[in-house]
Image (tube, rainbow over all chains, first blue to last red; front, side, top):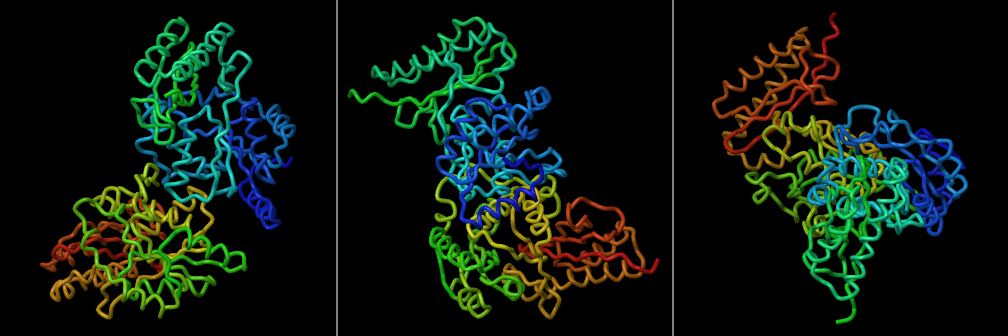
Length: 285
Length: 285
């Protein structure tokens, strides 16, 4: 595995790979790698010849009162995990390398960014879209791999590729969960034991919704009230949002359809966790 | 010359050219071609093997009360002129081809877009940056050619390339003028004979500023007041702005420096014309 910190060096290396006819897969991360990230590498390896993983905690996507400073970092462990997973090129730029000066021009997301997580994190998805655009332009991959846990992020990046005519396949990979059902997240490290136990309610509530839909329920308000009640019954949980939206456009829907996404964000103590699942309408009728 | 209206067909054609090792130069225009546009083709031909010209009147960069509907169009004449100039591929997409659906994700320009023309045309440069980003991603040229008449546009596109890590050389080409000194513009067709005559004051006033600077004047307020007075003496002229800014960042400057740009926008009747020149500090001291 090659470790590269400079954009120019990365471009030179990848241009050589490209000239040899090799395809490139990009796995963008903020590091503190877990099984979820490593599954992205597995998916990438199934499709591309050269796997580039980026590790960059992107200041642009953190709000002023968010956890940029304390976001967990462990370069040594990440490096070992990436190498073991089969990453070929680990790109770890400094903030100065990615943002050498004032950023006058950015990517802006409207409509899809002021719903779900965007409501409580203004500017977050503009920051995500901007850094992903930069990474895509630097790496110029054939395909890029994102975790479905960040459903809104995937939907926005997909839309960015369509709207700005990017020549890259955006691949969403399934959520990886701990045995308890808790979705893997770098932020899980913030949780106390009691909070980690309490947070399993998220997956349980998503499963409940799936059962309801499977039993023929199509009314979204009834599904939402059951999910909400279940989470509220857990005293350590503080709901940010529970919503059902169209998976592609993230706009609210009222009846379960082929493209519905149930998404939620819930605080456990100071830690905000997200999770989601697709709602597949029952075939019974 | 090949005329192409569909993105997919253009990409296929250019991929073949690229595989043959040919370099691509892009000349993006809104059509109604004049000598200024054709000079961009000349510059492109000096550097690139395959010259792609796009003609697309981009609705995204026109304000609600601007001249999108009446913007001059003449496809037949443009086609003949492009072919004669040596364009290899003329890309003329429909609005539906460029914007098949709602545009959720765009390029946003801050700081550089709310000065000069941006003051009276809110959203204009976001629209310009977005369509240029789309064209750059569709064509993937080695170099792209813009007229220096639209100084703010060039500065913003250059900054977009830097900030979003685009792999393209942005080339600014000198302003082409009519014998009277009037800068070539598709909008000149709107002018009455009297307005066209009156509009020559723009170039004359820029020349006056250059003479002052050449004579050692460094104080920008004194330069601006002379230029302003000269234009105001022309009864058909209504000043939108006359400013001196840094040519790269477009931020106001107070003393003439190596990178100063004198830029102005002036109405003649309902027609808004722009012009500009670099101010080169005198070497006398």
